[in-house]
Length: 240
Image (tube, rainbow, N blue to C red):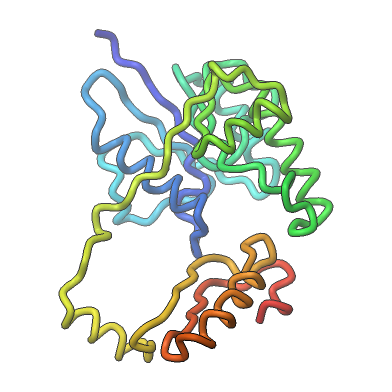
């Protein structure tokens, strides 16, 4: 069987600090490489060089430095000069004008349901990039049936071009021994019983509702506490 070459936009896979889409990008790239057979090869495109210890095996890495228009100019120019069989974009947007076979992951269309939780410029950008992905990608990965439904309803995407693939769970997530839990809790000065939120602190995460719900719970269960962890984002101050 002839070898096929898969190009991957890995530009967001090793950004720090990571949010959910960057973590998705990093893990799916690592697992694709680990689980692939000899009938395919990978070419990863980075804006900045990944860490030396990134578990990417011996796959080809191309560093394409550019501060502006990386996707629509630098990456597109590279692909035009040296095409791949399929381009996979796990957490961004296809280069404008790209005509080759492609697979894109679309995570959600939250800007449609909670417009006030995004800036006006962010809503416009998300609508334009999602519309382009939905129209141009050969195949689309949606992370939920809700995302698939939104793509069909909003952009008229053919359902046969959308495959729902739910997020996996990293193998490192498993029950820890009680003594290890206790050591970690004491080291972080955490309460014995708590509800944990982990993610960017911003309105679209609905944290005001979480805090209100916790307030109601705490009246009946005063020993439970709420722990919120994550970087601050847009309009985080009311939440804080």
